[in-house]
Image 1 (cartoon, rainbow, N blue to C red):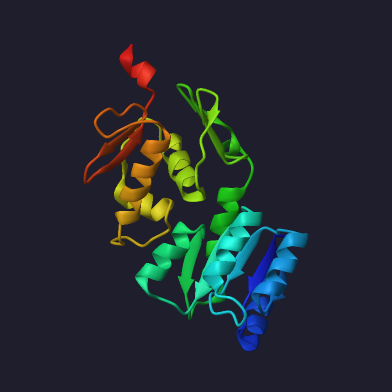
Image 2 (image 1 turned 90 degrees about the horizontal axis):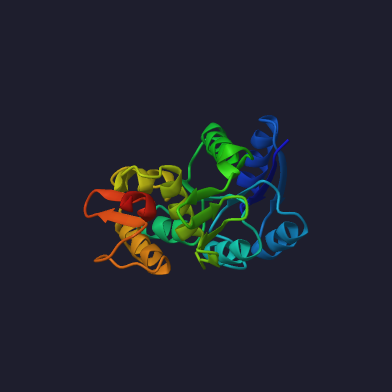
Length: 230
C-alpha cells in the first residue's frame, strides 16, 4: 500500500481528499503546515508527497526546497496557483508534477500512479553507460571518466531521459512533457537553459559538442563520441 503525505492547510479539503485517497487504496498521513510536514517527512519519507503551496507558516515553494534537501520522493504540487511562472518555478525546484485546483481525486490518483510507475524498481533503475559517461538512476548520480558530475535534480532528470533514448533526437516538446511535466505549448526556455548548464558540466561547448548534441529549435540527443569516431 503506497504511503502518501498530504500537505494541505484547508481542513475541509484535507479531510475530503484524505478520505477519497484512502478509498482508492492509499495509506495517507496529513499535515496542515510546513513544520508538521517536515517532522513527518524526516521520520519517514513515504512514497509520494501532495503539496499545497498556500501554507500558513511557510510558503509552499520554500517547503518544496527543504523537502528536496532531505528526500528524492516524488512531489506533486496541488494548488490554486495557476500562474505559468509559478508552475515553471516549482518544477525547476524539484516538483515532479503540478495540478491546479479544483481537481478530482481520480485525476490525482492517475498522476500518483504515473509517478509510482516511474519510481518503481526494474530496468529503469539499471545504470546506463554511454562511452565513459555512466548514469545511475537508483543513486541519481552521473559520472564522466570516473568523475562525479554535480547535477541538480532537473539536470539529472534531463540527462537520464536523453540517455534512455540514446542516439535519438528527443524533441523539445517531449522534454517539456516528460521531464518538466508541462502541457504542450508550454514555455520551453527552461529546456534551453538546462541543456546549456548540462553541456557545461559535461565539459563541452556549443562549438565543440561531444556527448550532448543540441539541434536548435528541434531538440537534443545524447551520443557516444568514441563510437561515432570509429
